[in-house]
Amino acid sequence: MKKYTYTDKKDTRSGFGAGLLEAGRKNNQVVALCADLIGSLKMNDFIKEFPERFVQVGIAEANMMGIAAGMTIGGKIPFTGTFANFSTGRVYDQIRQSIAYSNKNVKICASHAGLTLGEDGATHQILEDIGLMKMLPGMTVINTCDYNQTKAATLAIAEYDGPVYLRFGRPVVPIFTDPDQKFEIGKAWMVNEGADVSIFATGHLVWQAILAGEILAEEGIDAEIINIHTIKPLDAEAVLKSVAKTGCVVTAEEHNRLGGLGDSIAQVLAVHNPTPQEYVAVNDSFGESGTPEQLMTKYGLDAEHIVLAAKKVMKRKQNAIISI
Amino acid sequence: MKPTIQELEKTASQIRRDIVRMVHACQSGHPGGSLGCTDYFTALYFSVMNHNPKFNMDAVGEDIFFLSNGHISPVFYSTLAHAGYFDKAELATFRKLNTRLQGHPTTHEHLPGIRIASGSLGQGLSVAIGAALTKKLNGDKSLVFTLHGDGELQEGQIWEAAMFAPHNKVDNLISTIDVNGQQIDGPTNLVLSLGDLHAKWEAFGWDVLEMKGNDMADVVKTLELAKSRTGQGKPIMILMHTEMGYGVDFMVGSHKWHGVAPNDEQLQLALGQLEETLGDY
Image 1 (cartoon, one colour):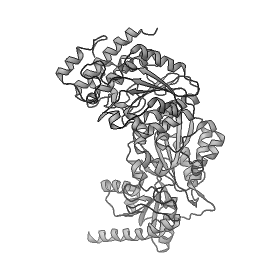
Image 2 (cartoon, chains in turn cyan, yellow):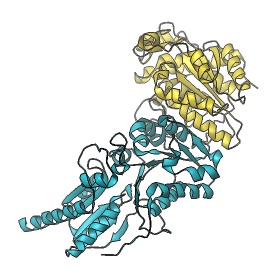
Image 3 (cartoon, one colour):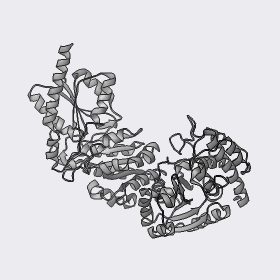
Image 4 (cartoon, rainbow over the protein chains, first blue to last red):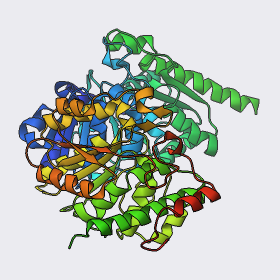
């Protein structure tokens, strides 16, 4: 197992804030919009440096999506910022018609995704957003795992022409990816090569997958860990290559098991290489109040549950071989 | 040289013929609102707006129009065709398989003249505000126009946008509401009353004008007046009083022709009331 360490921890949303500022410096067409959550979205530095390129829309997310779509006409590259719930479910039709169907170059940047929003509870903890967004034709869907990756992704989507959903979160988490990485949209990241089981993880579950890999290694299980930061377009080649080697799969995400990363991978496998798969995801339920750590444990989204899923799926693989 | 009112009326007559024929040909679509707004579209594209039929999405240095109530696409398509955005022969493909003239306007098929998809109501004002903000950021002095149905004002997003534009001094925007008092299920005052629209928009901080939408001279005059009042810190709203189905006597004033196509006999009756002035497509 390749060793991953960290010396610092930060929230992924701060990576977005840093990336937005840098994207703004690189390209004066970059503009930002926010629906009364500047501090939560870490947009302060961008606003301080480029006040004329910032639009405060107030608590009116539908209007924000429409304004962002309109601002692309004439060449602006709008980044909208609010919580993931208000970035997707609340404004689905605005995104569908004015952004996706109209093919507008809007970057929908969503913080506080998933359970790790914590104490505010289920009204704010969307677990369906990846599914909602990936079903829109032409929409790119990205879920980042740490500060550095989020910053790099923010810079990458500024240079990409087309609608993007960028999902990140609130809690402070280890920084373990390269600060100078080049983020390639649609290209999976090989975290650790292994032979026994493929663990495909996205967002906050990537660090948990690394911890799980260490536990499995101690027990002699050689896990391949792949970070799928871009859920759409999915790097099907990386998925199939890994599965051809390992023959079993665990998917891990901070999302409903319906419609998320696991389903995207299951679809590729069903068509090309049917393979035993276990989901580490929320089992079709809403969240609730609690600390991020408490919630991730209660809903089974941690290293321990990834380990259990890996052992279970390896057993299924063996049973399948025996039955042949 | 701007066309005379009489010339504009001739163009409007041809567009009305196109609308009825297009909707008849595919036996679907929305003739009522299209006929009611024909004078507005004609004035806008043949007299008021500075626009370039050699279509460019970014519209730098030219005025932009957004249709928010996308269901009146027949009048939009016919107007664009006569203004030179595409060949009027293409009007025959309206709502048919593989057409660029979808039931509701879209950029998806790359039809020149369309800059946003519309149809799901209430979204166009926000989009127009965005385009107007970009024009300001770019130092582009040209204007943004929008059209909305009155029934569409029942959508909440309209009022989010209504609040935003005055607060942010979006004064390069001229919006118009087609006040025909009708919607699918009946008169607006029975379905969900709109109340005193003039007072409402004024209270939100808009510069509100009124015009007779089926009087070409008044449409041109009011739109020009609106242009003269841009750049003064307030967005402009024109309450345009029209009759749904204007120009075809048996369609006038009734919500029943909101989304119904005429049969063969009704088509002939309608065409008998609308002079062919520029040649049918």
